[in-house]
Image 1 (tube, rainbow, N blue to C red):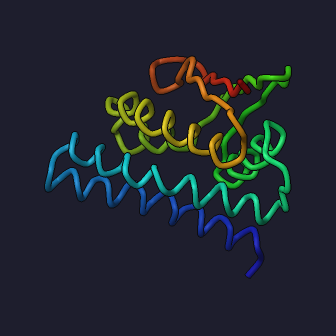
Image 2 (image 1 turned 120 degrees about the vertical axis):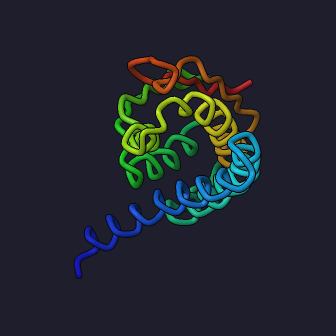
Length: 158
């Protein structure tokens, strides 16, 4: 089997397990509790992802450049469509396609996407910044799941 098929399989399983466990916890404990537990999971998962990106990409130095290289690996692997502009000491990112948001729409849970996106994206990207940068702040400016056309966020060095 070729690597592309294996990668697609693993990506599909990765997305499925995230949604499946959330729905099952929600059935037992309710949405608010499920989101709280999800937040706890996303306190750890981005650390694992970022540290693996450092290893795979052999990133030796922390900073905005390393952060973007790591995030590009994540976004490419997960199927995001994005672009960014670098103007040190900051980077502005635009996400035009978010696979997580698309999954919520397909599963008829779009009405919950804004709450989930605000809680998880803010946390996730702050942790990426902490792992791959030094004194890099994250600012969520706009979200596609908040009825926008795109997500816009900013990483900036203090």
